[in-house]
Length: 608
Ligand code: G6P
Image 1: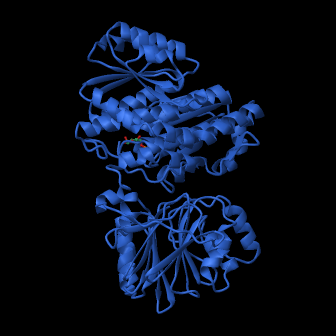
Image 2: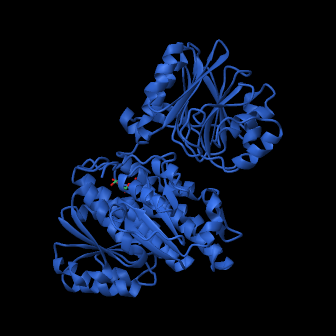
């Protein structure tokens, strides 16, 4: 992933493509590339780092061709190198592809293509696409693309051009957005309308399984079997800035609402429902070592630390391993025991947090086995760990972490199943958990569907200056994360507490001006939570409860209730945190703050 742009028409393609890449640069990228047909000859330029590096290289060549593609890459498979940057080509330098998404069966496709003599030049999953299309290509690019895609599993938003079938861009999508737009001067394809809305506000959004063929001034859309599709033209009334945010007011809201998709991405290709197991390719090389481990030690900062805390409950309950968690800034200055039967797991969205990195280096110095859950491919943590799991959540722009957090929790749930199935977890239980993980994208969508109800609730509570968040067991870290979100976004004083610990201090604060958000799904500590809620009510405090659908008792006790669907206890945090994200967001907006860039905070804390 990240940004796709293509142009075909009667203007010089290069400046239009570079402009399209620049307009998508807000999404984050680490390398980029462009292919332009200059007098039918393909001219490919790729560069690592800032777009300026690509621009400089391209300007030296002064291409005038009127067909081309561009891509800004945010690495998912393979390091950040020029060879891994898109576009990728076939063996004959005929077919060129830019791609967002993940080709799940790329390993087996690559093996088959190599057996047929194809030579690969990158570590990417994307490179199988031009070679597979080459395999079918007999002069008709759209046909070859359709044939190739029938063999592909995974997600893609992609655009393809061929020297030997000039005058066309073929674009296709499954689970990765793609939009086309055609006007008098030509046609555009992009992964984000913001890249092309300045040329025309008339857009055609492709749906999953569709293939579009753009020629100068016209387009057709079919399915993979070449059955024609009628497409609606949408007129966007977005400003350029709104377009970057996908029509949402802020990146934070966009990222909150993207969670069904980001969770789908973290689980894609990793669940083995029949075996009640998970396949974590990034851990294969340490699989045997992990079998012998007795302890897991998780280290992280900020929101990632709260996912670590939640992971502790998962790993201890199901994998039967003792699990310790540490804030990286504390861990690095104490004298941790690094023993050979302990695996050290570092969780980081950015992979660049200074304290997490220092803690990782300390463990490596002492010879410990290091693992990671990281969102940013090729980041320092990703490079320095022995083995790990990528989140594939896509770039997170809002400073307050939302979609990265839930994808960390899902990665931890999968890691738990992985470790537990190496040990004593039964097939039946493994199947049950894997089944529930697979349902998460739909369950998350149901919770996010209550956005308006939560907005009304936020209106009611927006004027309070203090709030308490309480939870137990799996939802204790979620109380901490909920309070952190409110602090970060709305500058309201919020305390997160383990509900059982409340009596030892924070209950002294409770009065009618100090509301409590109680996370109490129907789980193993429900009764205990009810007692705590009663204690707060007895002291005049009001309660907003996050409870499971069907819980009638809670409605009599709490002032307000937000319901979440039922799932197994271990996965409830992935649902219960969503209303807390939306609640903090709505209060921040109502108080008039810039929720994407809260004061005094940085997205990536690369200094101590
Ligand atoms: C900063 C961000 C947080 C994030 C934390 C850890 O404080 O504002 O959202 O949770 O760093 O970042 P990491 O990239 O290591 O997950």
